[in-house]
Image (tube, rainbow, N blue to C red; front, side, top):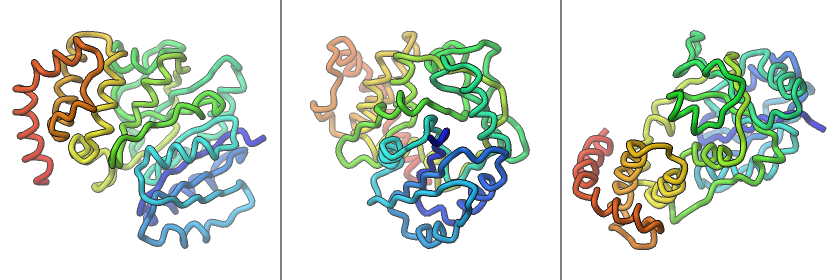
Length: 291
């Protein structure tokens, strides 16, 4: 059985995929498949992928109608055949020993269900902070107790994460990837390693550059995401911030009761916070939609 599925969701990234492909050709271990899910690209991605020919590893290409990265991820999770699963975005690429490192870490300890290692910029500088010097932790503690920010490389045992798919509400085209991390952290820890594994590059038209726009464009998903996250947030400060951000998306939905908090206390607090959230809503709407 294939050890690792390297999953790449892509949308109009024909100009970055060759670099990713080259990094896979340069791996020191080829016990992986490359699974590409094309989220309705309108450039020459499909034609380009046909030129990616190698006997070193298998390449599978699936094209779907444009639904967003989270929907493409659901397809990838259901289609993966590797024992392990990792997402390598189309504008990212691997260090040459990444696959070897990933497979070795899981082989060394069968109790590891998931692994977090480091992302870097092209110059080798680490994105965000180094991981704490502990063996394992869940993602919620990493984010809110240890204050670890910045993107990281996540690898999961496929049989565990395969069913942790992303929900979809309304016409939203985006769901924060951390929805899955919140869900995973309800049950499992991550093994931690300060090993540089993946290079990242943030495109000017990428999801990261437009995250606050999604408060409006994907308001249904963001409301549900905030409600889901609120159950695991560890302190009142984080819960207040979360409700303020929930309100911004809820205001965009004209306070549709279908999306309100089901928890009575959280619902009342979201109502109480609406005046502040309205100010934030106006500011974000003007500033970020004007960019």
